[in-house]
Structure formats: C-alpha cells, structure tokens
Length: 388
Image (cartoon, rainbow, N blue to C red; front, side):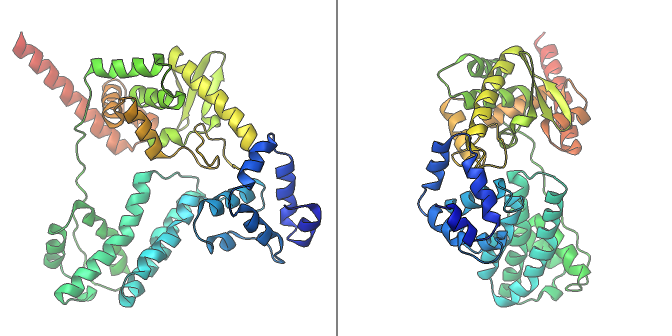
C-alpha cells in the first residue's frame, strides 16, 4: 500500500503521508489501523487521484469510522489542514435535518442555519474557542426550533409574517423549555424582514443544582479514587478531578498531555491560563496517567494530531464521555453529585472569578454558585443554632 511507485502516480501530497507512516514509532500500531476494513481501499482511491485531496472529498463520503481515521491520518501528516471536526460536522447534520422539512421551511431556515448559526461557530473555532457537549446541543436546538415553530404555524394556518406575541406565547407554553432558543431565530427573521415584530421570549430558566453528597461521602469517594488500585487508572484520575475541582467530565476528557505540568513529584494542571497545584497523592495519579498518555502518543503519532491525556479507541479522539460515565457508575462514583459538591465547597472559599476560571464555567454561573454556597452556609448555621 502506498509504495513509492503508487505515491508517485497520485497527488504529491501523499508523499508526506508515506513519510509519516514510515517514521511512526511503533509499526505494529500503524499496521493495525491501516488493516481496518476499508482503509486500504480508501487510501488507494485517494492515491490514484490527479487533483489535490481536500476535506470536501472526505465530507462527501459516508460518516464512518474509516473516513474519520483517514481524515485524521491525512491531517497528522499535514496533507490536509487541521480543523475543528465537531463544528465541521454541523453542516452535514443540518442538511440531513433540513432535508426532512418541507421545501418552504428549508428555504427560510437553511440560510439561518448555514450562514448565521454555523458560521458563528466556525468563527469561534478559528479563534481557538472550545465547544462542550452542551454548547453543541444548543447549537442544534437553534436550528431545530425554527423548523418546529414553522410546522406549528402551518398547523394553525398562519405564516411566519403573521406571528405575533400572543401566538408565540401560546407556542412557547405548549412545549419544553428549550423552545426559548427560538429567540435567536426570531431576531434574525426580524433583521431579514421575515417578520416585523420585536418579540419577547423568556430566557431559559436555569435549574438550581439539586444533587449533592454529604462531606463524608465525598471524602470516601475521593479516597477510593486515590487508594483503590483495582479501579482503572483513567477512572481514578477523572473521579479525583471531579471530586476535588468540580470539573465537568467532558472537559477532563479533552485534556492533552500539554495541560499537565510536572515539577519533580509535583503536578499542576493548566486551567484557563492558570496553573493549579494538585495534592501529592492525586499528583501521583495524574503523573501515571501522563506517562501512559505520552507513551501512547509516541506510538500513535501517525494516527493523531493531538496528544490526548485520555485517548480513545481511535487515538485521534479522546475517550468517549458515555464510556467514562459508565466506568464511574461501575465504580460507584457519582459524577454529577460529586461535581456539584466540589463546586459548592470551592465557591465557599474562592471568589466567583477564580471559580469561573478553574472550573471553566461563566462568571455569571460561578456567581450563582457563590450565592448558593453562602445561602447553604447560612442555612447550616441556622440549623446548628436551632439544635443548640
């Protein structure tokens, strides 16, 4: 596969790929990935092309594991430019959703989806801003809600231009809270003269965190992460960081080896421009995870553009969130309750601005946590006085 004679017949770009494969630190790993069903056929098809390979060529193929792998392979070898794949999958997802809508709805929502919502997210990606699973879910909601509203308007015999505040309020009251995401589309529609009215849409009500651990249970779970060597190392590290720093699991899984700083036995984490010191025993755990990740990176550099701290089955992608949640559940570690309790404890000790930077949440959300912590402490004191 991709012998010199073959590569010379195809795009000159593939010489870089061939060089990257030959320079891989562990040939058996390269062979494993190249031996996946369909990879050889796809690479050979690319090798016989007479025009430069582009991301668009792969975008036109079915969104399967082998397509993802070959794209990562070509990006690693600098044959293709690196891009934010979570964002770049949005246009294909949007086209699939829009294809199921009536033509008159597609005509309205398609420019909103592609030229407003998705373009804004591409701009964020170019500025190096990351995306959480929740932010991507809201992006999809911004595109789905207009289709939902237009379908409802058809059912009641109204055009978008006829929509008024009482009718909108009726629609909002009949659905779930994510219908509030329609605000963005209505602002866009007004700007493009599809409806002249300035609507009032209540913002999504943010639910107060309601699941917590008591201090003893949090301590027991943290001790299990540190001491129980029968648990997988990745589970112990993720569980420790959730229970200690209140970090989201999805954020931890997107750490790279460059986010970990070792100074002798001490380990620090890069969090939003700050270095956070870890306690000695958790430093040791994170240090072990770093050593494994660095070894995996050396073996898989031909298949990954990013040295993930928790590489997944496909080394170009981090460990899947659902997989880690299952591991935590199996170890009797309560992810959400542990995260909430850790954030509440931090909010009681540090300013909201620091809490926001450490946990990666917004200052507004961190302020909510600080308020909740103060109220919880006041209620605790009142309870103690009543017991005295």
